[in-house]
Length: 273
Ligand SMILES: [Zn+2]
Ligand SMILES: [Zn+2]
Image 1 (cartoon, protein in one colour):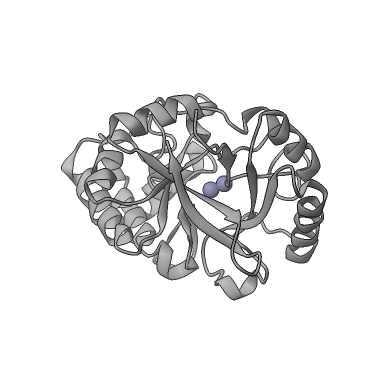
Image 2 (image 1 turned 90 degrees about the vertical axis):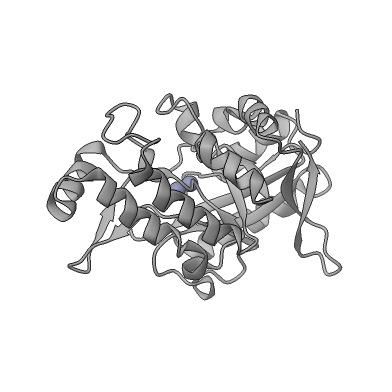
């Protein structure tokens, strides 16, 4: 399917996943993975004991060495500078929250009721205004987290399939999204094509949706393939369909990471899609 099967967006029982890191690694190896990157959450809603996590994944790396490369990543959100996670080998930068005028944070992906309440209370019930605020925060995700990977770029659409609230083709939605996309494309960070919501039947498309993915191709932005797995069964969920969608948009390669640097550090390279 891809020349180098890997996933770098992986959650476990150490944050909000349902399988242990060891079980995830076993399953990845059984599926023929060449590399597995863990990306526990460190954000205002889900917060791990960083040292416990880093040590657990480091021990797994030792156990699997020579058979499958195991990497210690992290998924950062608000106010978590890279210094807060010493030893992280790569960072996924994600926006799950919109900063609110009263200093609070409005979660966009927890429940539809939550998102609707935030929209009603802070954006006068106007989903386009809320989406614009989301993309304003998303445009800063690289500055906030110094990420290697831009996570689920258009997460604001999380409930829009089950509960249609805005038209994803409307310029009021697309313009702020495209603006954020172009700002982030200039950083050189890799955009993930995230199968998480697709796998759980929440969306018919991946993050980012097709029009955004096509624009990324025009901008020659690098992309990678992510399952955003919260359980072992979905580690490679959606990969074949997502790879086909990426090829249809003109992508011919994806970014991968492995311990291949001169001092054994993680380096990014590209493989054929
Ligand atoms: Zn996320
Ligand atoms: Zn995630």
